[in-house]
Length: 81
Image 1 (cartoon, one colour):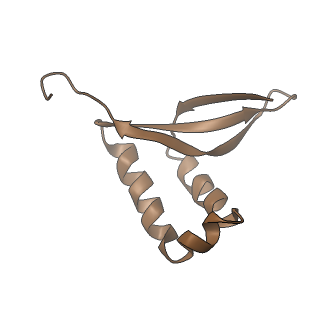
Image 2 (cartoon, rainbow, N blue to C red):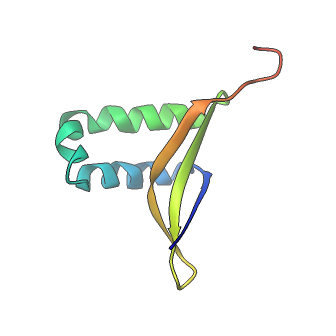
């Protein structure tokens, strides 16, 4: 198995929420707030000050399977530190 990360794309957000909703443990914790998680991911995606990443598994056929989002962290912007 090979894993990689890349910049989170707008199209990844619904898939990340689906992954969260289908997770055996996390689904019960976020069931009532999944829409808030989606809003938070969407908001973070639009900010220049936040670096958001998508994690993928490389499949033998060359395709990639999205594993989820992560790496949300503040990016240092020049002149603002």
